Structures are given as structure tokens and as C-alpha cells.
Image (spheres, rainbow, N blue to C red):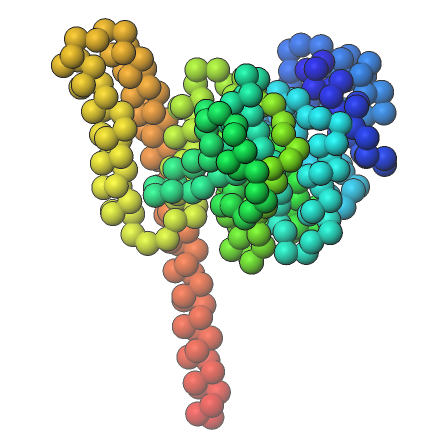
Length: 309
């Protein structure tokens, strides 16, 4: 936490309001923030609300026109806030903006994201050497919440991040999708370049949460019947995770077998947890649409009777 606070303290932009949400931490977060950022507002939460809930809590206290969300495992440069926030403030067509995220060794981590089949959120440039191949500003499907700027009025209008994506993953993807469906662009900026120690707080369970929340994302946002999506999911699970296990077993590679087996079990456990959530969401959406159709039909019949009279 201390390196992050020191990085934020170096921001050159004047008039910044800094809000830190202490998401039920068990360390000395409040003391560290108080020493490094004495002007910051610290909001303690008695329980861990996850990324979405914690971010919403902080946003509710913000007074600025543009919100900039930064994970505490990022290391932003002194000009990061200005470079991320200005395009969002100056260009009405921009719904949200993110930037180039890199690993500590300089390899690319994310240059904006693409939403693929079955809701697979792919970070462009993942683990590639940075040779400038993503040094062009462009619209993308989503930008990670680790460093995301958005106008406060838009964020509030959309209801913030959906806090069902606990503890993290896909709340940023859904927010960006909703912005794009309203006609806004989600902008990737090649600068600033921010170091991100991804998923440090989730450890080895990140695959579980990633795929649990992916199914929730699909249920909330995908269109069309659930049957074909379930078939595609089964094919994907076999191709990406079960087949590598079988290959390692057939070739007598115990080390690789253990690695692939851990991946398979983590993904499968996440999907098993996500299935009832997804089915519940689809059922509620179906009931809501039925109620809307019934109300629309009743309104049509009333209009016909009125016209006949």
C-alpha cells in the first residue's frame, strides 16, 4: 500500500480529490494512507465489499466531474491522472478511458480488452514484449478497472459497478459494455504506462472467481437462448482445460499434469458456482420480460377498446 500512496502523492494535477476505501483490511492501511496522503478521505468498510462495492462506496463520496479508479497494486506515474481524465472530460463521445498496463518486468499486461465468444474477456498484448505495437489510441470493448476514468454523471446514471461480481472480475467489462450500448466509446490510451501487480489480493483463486463471474456476466448480458451457449461452453472447457490434462497424462508429464489439473479444477469449481447464479439471473430476466409483455398487451387492448368506443 505504501508504494501506491507515494505514487498518488506525486500526481502533478492540481485540485485532485483523493478517496481511499479501506475494504476491511487487516493491515495498517489507515495509518499508511494518513502518513503518505494526509489530505485524503479514508472510508472504512466493516466488511470486504470487493472491488465493485468498494469502488461504489468511494464514488458516492466523490465530488469531482471525473472519477479515476486505481487499484492499490498499481504504480501510476506523476502524470497518470491528467492523461487519463482529460480525454473523458473534453470529449463527450468518450464513456470511459484506460491505459497501457504492464508487468513489473516491462512486459505488456493489457492494452485494452476484447470480449470474445462466451464472454471470454481477453486482454490485448498479454505477456508480449512492448515494442510499441499498441502505441495507438483506439476504441476497445473494455478497459480494466485497475486504471479506469469515467465521468461521474455517467457512472451514477448507470448505477456504478454491479456488486454481484464479488470480489472482482467482469464488473469493469459490464460497465464498459453498457456504455457502448448507449453509444459511447471506450478509449484505450497508450500513455500513461502503469505497472500493475495483477490479482495480488486474490492469489491462486483468481481462476475460480474469473469463471464464476464470467457466467454471471453472460447471464446478465448475452442475448438469445441458453442452450447453444451451454454447448459452446462445454466445447471450450474441453479444448482449453480438459484436453491439456489428457495430453499431459498421455505423455507422462507429471509436473505439467499437476499444473493443468489445478487449472481445470479451479475453472470447473468457478463454473459450478456460477451456474446457479446465472440460471437465477436468466429466470428473473424472463419473469421481468413476461411482465413487460403482459403490460404492453394490456395497454394495446385498452387502446383498441378506447378507439372502438
